[in-house]
Image (cartoon, rainbow, N blue to C red; front, top):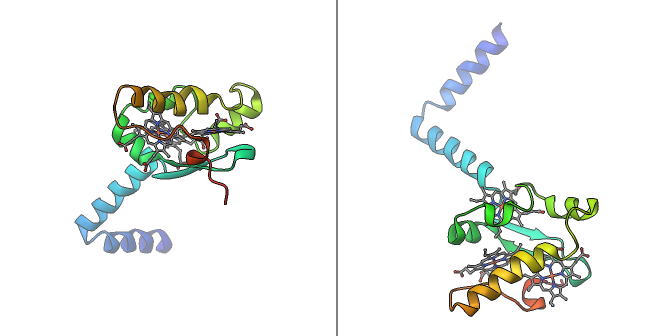
Length: 122
Ligand code: HEC
Ligand code: HEC
Ligand code: HEC
């Protein structure tokens, strides 16, 4: 099997810089696991909603604060809205804006509650 042999040898050579290889694998794993650092959510007629995902993961730690309601998949919210499992604006009102408002009332760092600070028309 000359092809497989050459392939394995090639990978061995690539991984000869052992540390580089381990770090690259770790970064790839972390990126897969946590999803994109920055996402843009559909915002209907009010325009798209840029969402700093990594910032929320860092500040909130508990993934389930959001992902109890929709799975860890891009486009999941829109898919559940299309099925009627989630109402339109349900995530916006019951998660995003509610959390930001409650934290603001408690004097903690919070995100925006004004329509046009979340929705960006280009
Ligand atoms: C403040 C809310 C919130 C928190 C907390 C949160 N996420 Fe997400 N996550 C989202 C939203 C919103 C999406 C995009 C869903 C969509 O597109 O419909 C998403 C998408 C994802 C995706 C798919 C993104 C992609 O790039 O393909 C993964 C994976 C993911 N989250 C993992 C996590 C993990 C792991 C944690 C905890 C460490 C976490 N999330 C915490 C809101 C959150
Ligand atoms: C904290 C950020 C945030 C704020 C503040 C906010 N929105 Fe949203 N909005 C979202 C997100 C995220 C979605 C998509 C998820 C959903 O539908 O729940 C959305 C969805 C929408 C939709 C589309 C619903 C659909 O399915 O067609 C409209 C329209 C909308 N918002 C209008 C508004 C208006 C008007 C305001 C001000 C009163 C507002 N939004 C404030 C984040 C926000
Ligand atoms: C459980 C609480 C919680 C939920 C749910 C949540 N956020 Fe936030 N959000 C925060 C906190 C806390 C901050 C402020 C982080 C900081 O600056 O320390 C923040 C900040 C933000 C910011 C400002 C980031 C910046 O650079 O200043 C945006 C935009 C935002 N959130 C959008 C959203 C959207 C859209 C959703 C819903 C998909 C959402 N958030 C859901 C807690 C939440």
